[in-house]
Amino acid sequence: MTFIILVSYWHVARQWVKMRVHFPVAAHSARRETGAQTPQFYKDQFSLRRYTDRFLHHASSTRILEHKRASSAYPPYVGLCRGGGEGETLSAPVFNKDDWLTDKANLGVPFPNASGTVSIDQQGASCHAETVYRQIFFTMPAVLGYWNIRGLAQPIRLMLAYAGEEVEEKRYQMGPAPEFNKDEWLTDKAKLGVPFPNIPYYKDGDTIIVQSRAIMMHLARKHNLYGSTESERIRADVLASQLGDNLMGFVRVCLSTRMFKADFKAKKEEFLKGLPDTLKSYSDFLGDNPWCAGKSITYADFGLYELLDWFRRFEPGCLDKLPNLVAFCNNFEALPAMKKYMSSAQFLKDPILNPFADWGV
Image (cartoon, rainbow, N blue to C red; front, side):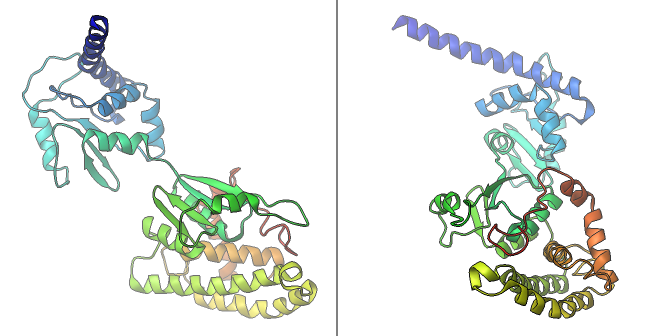
């Protein structure tokens, strides 16, 4: 029993020494190695929570600092704030109370705290060591689940790439012909835990969204892609609804044989007769605007690009007489984020539809 007590005291003493000596030095080293861009660390002279201890331990490697800053996920300012008193002698630079009070006045949170940690990013500020630690080390990327095809998920993928949101994709595979079983998806479907389990689905923490339109509208609100005025939002919603109608009509043509027991060639000819009028409607709607809602890109533009790309693959040259649609596609592909994404291994050029379709496989 005496031995166990001694070991326990030794462990506590060791942690106290690490808290008082090692971590301030680690913070100072991180500052020195990464330069002026490195977040500032303020030493709490009374206590550092275990979450903050672990945070400083990780931060001392600087690799996490650089990675998080490069991905815009790491807050540009993190401080361990003084708990009170002044002038403690440490091996790392110590900032007096005035330094903290200056920052405190500009922090912009309801309860500015001087005994935990403070994190400020583009979305706002938060206090307390545990909160910040969890934000930095336990934030998992969202998950997007869909078939390993472009289909209904491609506009969502484009939006995520444009917004720079990190996402983990779950791309389901169908079984071989002639059954084309969906067992891989059906296994996850039973575990999804939402009233209307379907794909695509988007899972971000406890938030699970199904239906492609609902996902896109959520991402539009999240990433400021829903227009800045009511007029822009109306135009985006109108176009998105129209795109859904035309997309479903086109998919019915492409699934003629298996799903509708119809002749694909006959359905294709019928569709092509009406395609020029459909495209002209989009051209008239776009007009001289660079994007569907006006000068700012919205979620509907991602759907419009995808549908136009399908059409020009289905009937090459169909856009040639509509220069504003050609310019729209070129401008979309020239966006830096789109250019980067479309040249990456994550971009899915084919297949467009599932393997039992008459076209786009």
